[in-house]
Image (cartoon, rainbow, N blue to C red; front, side, top):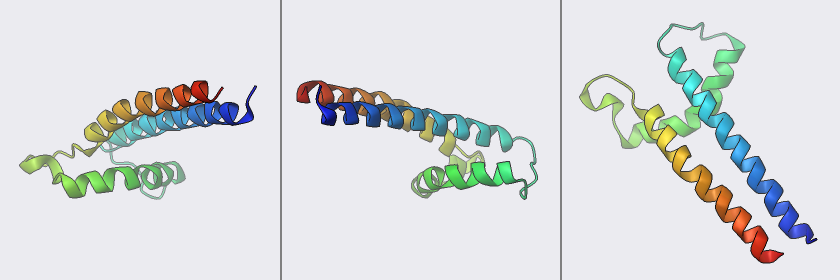
Length: 100
């Protein structure tokens, strides 16, 4: 077995799990926007800190709700993650198989 290919497989799995967790955190953040959570709650602050670097650039490109007042940045983030996750995972696994 090649150590480099094993490392790439492990990296692919870590990225896959990380993107899944990020996807779930974005869903939780979208749900939190429907209720008015305590902004000083440590869990709420953690979720905002983790998801804001993903959602803020999307908001800069697409204005808030395109006139409707609804923030569609989580939807776009979902679509980006759903597109990137299999692409990156399969690409890294294929690379690891080529190296073997």
